[in-house]
Amino acid sequence: VVLCSGKVRWDLVARRDKMGLKGKVAVVALERLYPLPSEELAAVLQRYRHVEDVRFVQDEPENQGGWPFLSAHLPRGVKRHLPDYELRMQLVSREWSSAPS
Image 1 (cartoon, rainbow, N blue to C red):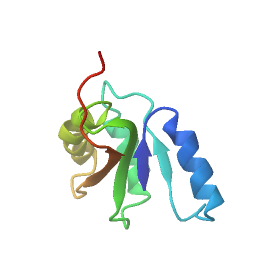
Image 2 (cartoon, helix red, strand yellow):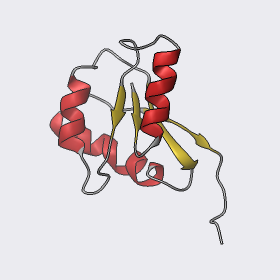
Image 3 (cartoon, helix red, strand yellow):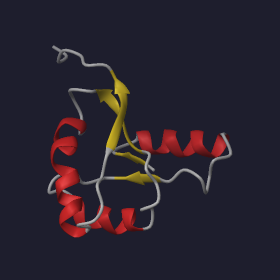
């Protein structure tokens, strides 16, 4: 399962389809980051409970974009709606970077 936000979604879908992984890799777009879409995401993840490899992909560096906020708050939010599910995400992004001037 690949979670993402923004236009990177279309890059991921195109790459997944090009690699012949449609039906094997789910691309889930979080278009609203605040307030947390935890209830909606829990409903989607319910279908993928058997999947242990969940990634969050973003264009921004690790210390920017949605990751810092989502990694801290989304697992707890999902757990409120799926008490027996532990959301463990791995990040796919560029390395930490200073803010642009």
